[in-house]
Amino acid sequence: MLRSGQTIEKYVVEAVLGSGASAEVYRVRHQQLRSVHALKVLAEVEGARRDRMLEEGRVQASLRHPNLVGVTDVLQYQGRPALVMEYVNGPTLRDWLDQGGVPTPRQAVELCAGIARGMRYAHERGLVHRDLKPGNVLLEVSPQGLVPRVLDFGLVRQTWRGPEALTEFGTALGTPAYMSPEQIRDPSSVDERSDVFSLGCMLFELTHGVPPFEGTDPVEVVKNIQNGRRRAIADTLPPGLQDLLERMLAHDPDERVGTAAQIVNELQDPEILRTEQIQAHPATAMTSLEIVEPPERTSRNRMLWASFALPVAGMLLGATVVAVAPPTSDTGPSLPANVVVENVMVETAPVPRPVEAPAPPPVPAPVEAPAPPPAPVPVPVVAPVPVVAPVPAPVVPAPVAPVPAAPKPVDAAARTGTIALTGDAKSITLVRGNTRITRLDAVPAGTWKIRAEFESGAVDAGEVTITAGQQVSIRCIAFALRCKVQ
Image (cartoon, rainbow, N blue to C red; front, side):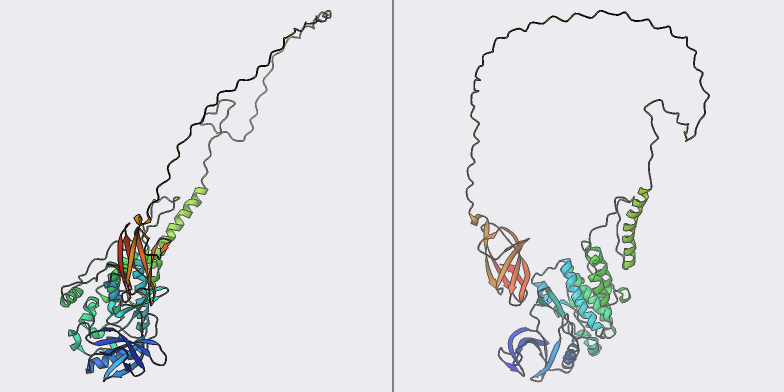
């Protein structure tokens, strides 16, 4: 085991990042450039392992992709090979999940899409990883969120050393819970579809919290994979995501999604997370339109076109129908129902008029004498009416409403709680909707999301529920990028 401050060629050891049966990993710094790297030192000096690690270094040194961890140098330490790699300041996906990381379906899709982009790059260069699992994916903290980066290409197809490695689970063959059926049968002949199966197992665990294949020991897990016995896919997931998982975990490689590039394309499609049903336009005769997502997108496009064309057709048809009511008359009786009147002129015979007798001559009116002028009418004298001053009405006082008493001030401590922060986080921010709180001695009661500021950056690190008057202790762990209530 290397000590902090110890020098290996151009690098100074700063800390131990992890150790296992096959290798030890350290954080080191270049003495001249002051750049930080990860150093992987082989724990044993043995021919096959040594050759495999050197091959891993050559393979990863040829890969440059934001979703892969590259190798920048190869060293020798006491006869053991050591790989100098890019340093990723973050936990493995395995550690993150074990510390309580529960991604949403959207986060699971984004993480899986990042891994698939890295594997698409490797597959295009003829490399099959053969050991994809959460422990071989590092999560880098960035302003855009967690970025998955695949490492450990020690089991790429080019490094296969023969059938005797079949007994070395987790080293030469892979990790049982994420191996494809064809990799169990013949690891030397697998292609990129084997990595697709492993990626499907990881996507299943990200969306369900457990791997698809289980067993009391590795042998039982391998048997379940060979026989296709796995957990059912949850019907609460979006239909598009359910369909993709079914095809990624297909037992027969010919029925599986063929390439990592296809996975990237499907995961980037917004339809993969759609859950709602499309309702038909009110103008159509249908009351609803149920969309079933097929594997090919052409069928979906036809159904979406139908949902657009049918309402337009209904609108066009409705514009050509005109209802005309029969004319009515308010001057006389209407015509019988079986009579049709058209614009036709009808000639009728004249009706003879009766002969009238001549009128007698007029009789002159008698002349009347002029009427005498009317006599004057006497005007009566009216006595003046005395003016009486109005008597004012009695003033009735208006009722006075009682003034409510001012509410008594509520002690802030009765509505808030306090939080004690321990661990590696520099600070935390509590977030709920648009409200952000950094003061921890007066936290309003309720459930808050925790935004933790680590040395590597700020991340969403969990949530806390606090009641009025409660004192809560929160411990934040930088290695796992998580905060937990103690």
